[in-house]
Length: 241
Image 1: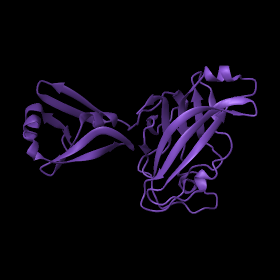
Image 2: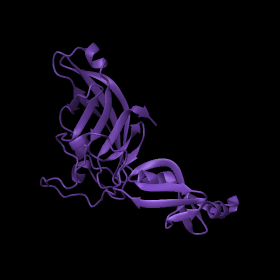
Image 3: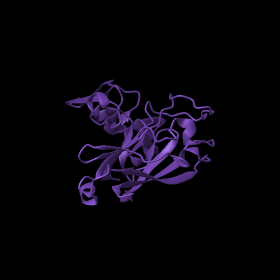
Image 4: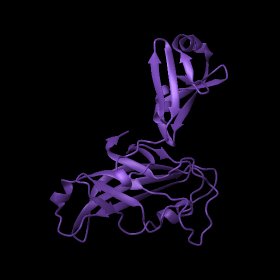
């Protein structure tokens, strides 16, 4: 655990500050760069402490010499960035069945199943959306495209599929605080790919983009505000939480 305002901590003093469970006043859930993590922050005598692992995720370097822990400056924050060269894009990242939060929307992929459309094989991705703000809002008013732009499914062979059809009614549904909506996003292969060939290349990642700086299409933007630099959701469909 690292005291938020400390840059260099002596291990002996750190251990002493936590002596006795009675000094811990309360624990806090921890969100790092928009992603909920399992570790907890604690409050001791009015001071808040966070795990070193949380600072590491934010790019803070650490080193230990004897009984002294030294923290270095943070690099550019990133949340599990995915390699991709010029196409690399940051976002709020997580796994299948894990709830992610970007300051407005709580997003979860609840399942992935095979699907077909006029003989074309593909995949159906079940998602769950919750309004994490204190006001009524809709995805359309927070930069999510009603045409499905920026919604992609990556396959094991590197192929990328666009979401089929528009995002109506999901993006147009106004949700109250805590309100929830479910939807199934469908992605299909090109004609000529057999179901067996499709099954051999299962989906590995879902990219669900939100662009709050995108063009305004005659609508009033929501007063809700994202709390992360890039509110896009990146879901690793191989791992499960």
